Amino acid sequence: MTFGGGTRRRCISCSEKHGVGRHMSRLLLFVIAVSISIPISSVQTASQQSPAGKKAARMRIIKGPAPESAKDNSAIIRWTTNTGSSLIEHSVVHYGTDPKKLDRRAESPNRWNQSLPYMIHRVSVMNLTPGTTYYYTVESVRGDGTPLGGKSNAVNKFTTRQHQ
Image 1 (spheres, rainbow, N blue to C red):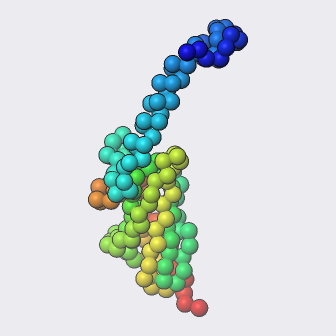
Image 2 (image 1 turned 135 degrees about the vertical axis):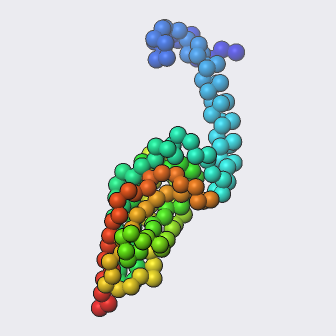
C-alpha cells in the first residue's frame, strides 16, 4: 500500500525530502494508542478517586481564601488551588466565632475539570448569626476525608450583615 503518490516535500518531522507515506506507520501507531487510551480513561466513574501522589503533595492555594459574599445568615468562601488531585474533592471551611476554636465545618464537593491547571473552591456557610464576626481556615480533602493539601495556614475572618 502506498500513501501520498510520488510528490516529495520537505518533511516537518525529520526535515528530509521524501514521500508523504514515510512516517505513516508512526502516525498510525499514535492514532491507535490515542483511540485505545481515551475509552479506557473515560471508564472511571465519578466516585472513583485518583490516588494521592505527587500532585497531592504539591497542591497549594494560589488565590484567596476570601469571602465571595456575606449576608445576614450565610456566606460563600472562595479560593483557588493550583491543581486538582482527584476527580472529586471536598472543599472544606473550618469556622467559628473564636479564632482559636474553629469547631464548625462546612463543605462542598467539587469536580475537577482536568483540562484546567487549577481548581476554584466555593463553599456556602449557612445558619450564621447576623452581625457576627466569624473566623475560618480552608482545606481540600478527598471524598473519604484524606487531606490533599491546599490548606490555609492563616486564620481569616468575615462579618455577617445586620438584619435590615
